[in-house]
Image (cartoon, rainbow, N blue to C red; front, side):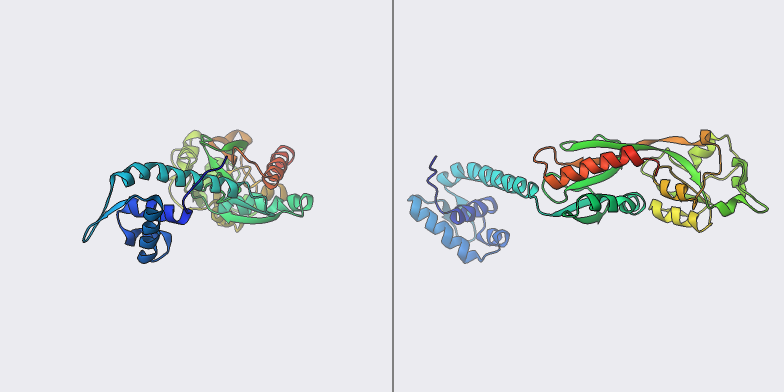
Length: 302
């Protein structure tokens, strides 16, 4: 179907100037000069044979024709922007951008990426280490790995796994005069804290569940990233309270140990999820999703 349209640049100039009621502000938005905006608007008026603005001494005011046209043009440019965003999201370039929290990325995802790269050597990987809100539908990133309650709106959500909160430490702490053998022995050791999003995952809650009311639950250093608390535990600086899946590799290798009985693990309220665009999934995203879900199923303990 043929759509007879005036020049798009002229329509953009008018729409921006009409929203701002200013050639100067429109020019700033469009990254051109005010004179260029004024020229485009005048050319549009000449082409249509109708004035769109009343040009006052220090202001612009829309004519009746301009007022009628503005809402439809604004809606049209919004739809064009949305269409362009969807095209960018559908781009199937060879670079896969993964948004992941720094700790989960370094401790769980990165050690496993070689298996994905071996299977898909044509897909280049870019890791965006952040917890901030990202747009997986608009092409900012291709996928996001997030720890949370799972109620994510407007995106494809794949459950990965939940965790149990458990104390972990260096094997060295299991020896010596104050060997860490029973929960009561924690009074002789430094508590390493992670400032969790899940308030139930604190030493205070764990000690209460274990019936240990005489140990100060807030003593010891606090960390904003799990990886820093885990590194302190690896160095023998204390006992970290951490999700068991996050330290699965360290536990399997014996670099960290769970000093107490498994019954003293407590379930965490939040879980890990893979987020991706609901529509227009690219081959690279589908490949990563398939691999990750398989990885979780086959190697969830390691």
